[in-house]
Image (cartoon, rainbow, N blue to C red; front, side, top):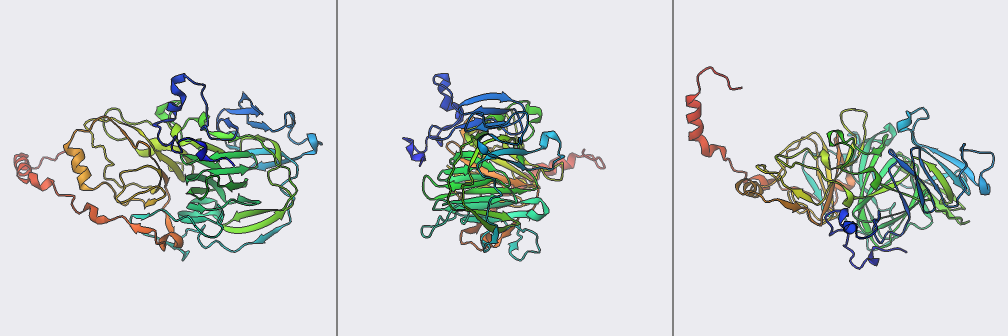
Length: 505
């Protein structure tokens, strides 16, 4: 099984400032995946220029992805011929309304040994008491609080067998999947592989961010190897299994309902920057033909169900479409920022966004805070004191991240609800205002991220009652001294000279 420890230095990709370093100033052939990634992938993004790939051959296309494990499998000129080559079955997965506009219509055709309908029916499973899907205030299992909350890293079980699905824990969210509007934030902790078990999220899309240990993910479209410092998106309805090549693993998940992740608009930035479309990688078809018992776990409305079948769910020989899982390496993010004065809003750190029914506010954004240059002059550089409309849930993949009000370690979670004020302690404010900062690289060997939403979050019982929960210490701001009063005499003199009755505009 592939392992990240095949690298001579397991932290090789954590130490780089940007992916560009791996290209060695064009002295070596360029490559798109990490050296220890065992799988072939295609380089493109499903809502932009896509690619056709047969084995190792990639051809530009403007229509959809096409992938064949066996060349000549996919029918051309039609999707569902009377007979598919090799006796395969044609199966379509449609993710949007049939009449959705072409630019947002999502679907895929799969050509497989047996269709997904070949199963033995569904049975209900016991609820996972540590997961939640209904975040409406009427639910007695959720909590509302304006307090800035945080959680130390959740422990990975050392005993028992906990796979990726049984290790899901919900922290916070908004809405309900049956309303097709909302989101949930989870952590996962796992110590064993999924054994002859696949998972289907029928509620929404998973954006998965491993923090400790790589994930070897098999999907119906092919395998993806996802390491800390990368993310993967697996869309609604797609079957997948997770293996742990590095042993016990932990990470974060952002789940969205009734919408899909997409690249944010670039606006005045122009045609390039932030997360570039060609850096998103999708799997290549890789079929598994095996007559053996499998369990398929379905999540629907936050409830869990199981079906069984006597064949592998990964028997897809070829597929085409634009509804395809994909991954992205966060070290490829192209940071932009101020090169004169002041901060730009944190939207400049957005990798993916998911639209809401409000055209002025997304349901969710995924932001990254990674190594970059800090150069603004005559500017207060730490995070300024602020309140904003967004709910913010942060995590740290590796390294150190300033700007939190207390200990923030890899695997930690930090939460601030909308309109709650936050900012740094006085010591940092004093240092930043009294000394001229140098041009510097910040967040070296670190990547933090934020799940951000226009929706107010409620907190689950699991997170609220966890021994890992703690509150940001408000006393850290007790020494924010009143500097204004030191200028009382100067202010009185200015006011004394002000003409009476003259308003200052």
